[in-house]
Image 1: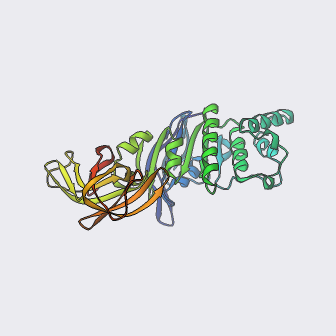
Image 2: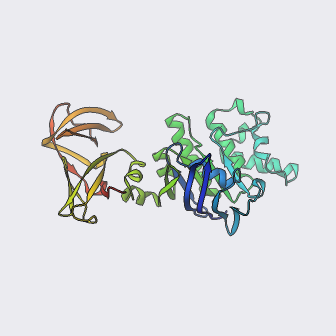
Length: 339
């Protein structure tokens, strides 16, 4: 296991910059989650770390060794990096055991088989060692792919949308099982996802990406409680956005004031208010426009002064009723218009 470091990395395709001066660190023996929409540069980062593509500028290190730079590119097979692709990429003509043993060619045959069975056992699939990929479920294929990536004791493992396409229940089960396996193996991990829940559940560190740029890198709780921009706030859940001016250290909205003492008086600002930061109480000032169930809560659309926001609230609001709105300060953020 080793620290993985990117320093001012750039990568372009046909004149379009996929990564723009990205610097980040995957902590040793921890999980760095890369969160962002399609096209944000997340998977490009994994390909560059794995050595599947060169960097245009900047530097990638694993431990103290430079893996990629404008002057150096270590071959993929020499980097000791494991990778689990979105489609798992298991060899269809090999059994689960043989798939896991494939990267252990430096060991003798008996030791390869023993090690492969050990890793299949760690992911709960020792009993499927003789099964072929087409005989395995999607979740079982994902666990075999993880075992194959970890068996050679890599310095780091890269997971590219590993739970994509799985149903919600299996997704949660596999996420928990994968995290437990990674913690037990103490492997430095980069985990790519577009799903905020996955990112928050697995990450020790969280890097939020958009359009090839790194918006924020921090602990998950800090990213949620103290986003550095509107886009960073939106990456971790639904927000309501409102633009106005800072007056007397606050920003007025149709639903209440938001503290903005850190911004210059009179400055034009944008507010981001998390849906769960809106508390609806009996009163007036806003009207309930729609109510939709969302698990233990309802998604409630409220309107005031021609502005419509969404609240995530306990299921007690009725369509058409009027309510008062309290904005919880912990979930409300004000940014300069340039943020």
